[in-house]
Length: 309
Image 1 (cartoon, one colour):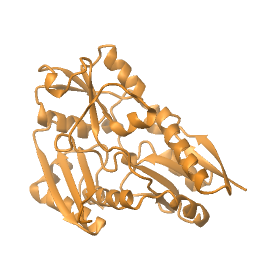
Image 2: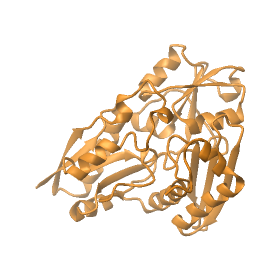
Image 3: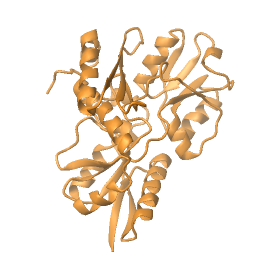
């Protein structure tokens, strides 16, 4: 029996996600055993600086990908929103399980919603994307950086450091966190590319493992995430830039992709919605529409040139 080494960050959420994937794979085959190997990433080590200022792409995946390429682990379970648009040669996303809720949620100290926040209220978020869209809705709010795991962020809200925080619904659900929250509608807060989905990454040469991972792949999630990532690729995007996208399968089976680029202060927001059938073509077309609107200027100002090779 082959023992498959699974690389995982040490955070509670990362371990829950890895363990769920292992459980699902074990249900599909009894020919494999699994062992989890903890890996600490740059994003885990640097907690006192906002993600956008740490620099580079793949802050939560580079060390894990190095372990994959070295053969120290066989596959890794990532949050899709952490994945760079381009993967190292020799690695691939072999499986994308069914997506969890893609929306963001607002938690407030009062328990009330966004409209209840007073002008100047302090809202914590680790994401430029969330901050930009929030300021577009409520330019009177004071958005401040907030890093750490879900429990840490909620603890700082309760201790009075913040009047409100924004979290991903998917992380709360996977962790079984039941704090009162207010889902933010997609027309208010478009999610990160791939938010709510998992990316299972392995070596392209490991055919046996790829066949196993395919047994838990969800075709609809895969195709919609491919469209979102095609947009990200064309825009040469990273966590340093407020880029958002969400693709859905319509009743007529066509794909509908909404994409957004915003300035950090929320004063400039470029948004488009496109419908198509081919995910990569759709994502590229949506990105081109955003660039045509003028999003390229914002991207270049933030150091993410969409025309860079």
